[in-house]
Length: 114
Length: 111
Image 1 (cartoon, each protein chain N blue to C red):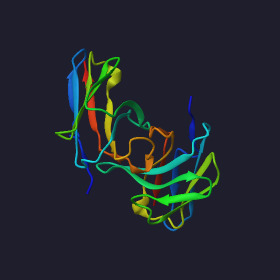
Image 2: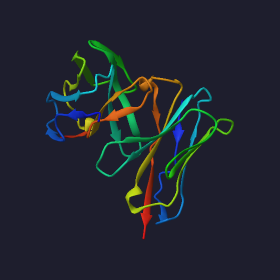
Image 3: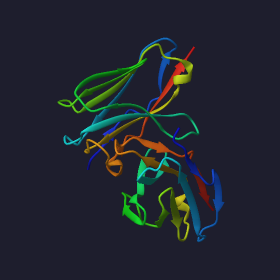
């Protein structure tokens, strides 16, 4: 069974620190990887996508993909209180499109504290 | 901005009732989806549609049906609601890149 696994948390980090969120996936055929953020009581929103091995940076966010280890991470630098949310790791075997083939992790709750 | 609108944020229904959840998107997306989200289980795909009048079963279609008569509208139907269908229901539409745009969700309670 294809799975995406995340530690449910909560992961607590002080404001200004680096938050590191991790995810492993079981399907070696996976092609596209996404991080969605979900605030409490809200719906998920896409914050990062990554398709190639290595790092991808966007502002304070860096997504990292290691295909050999089947491992994805999301680093949030200079964490802010407003980053407190649940972060969902999402994987698909399709390079483009294929929204119906997305596999969602159960999410890691991040708490940024004063 | 992409907007996906779900008709009801909160519903309370009784066992056996027929329930309609409606979703409208304004970005001319081909693909639309219905998920349910439960604590500890993540998002699970119920049905999706890649064109008008076209539908495909997702991972958990039992007890549900869908309708897509117009491109912008995708409806989820619970023919006879049961207590195990109490959940948060999320509609989404997508580009060909696979990025999903979600509606605000409909929290359904079946008594």
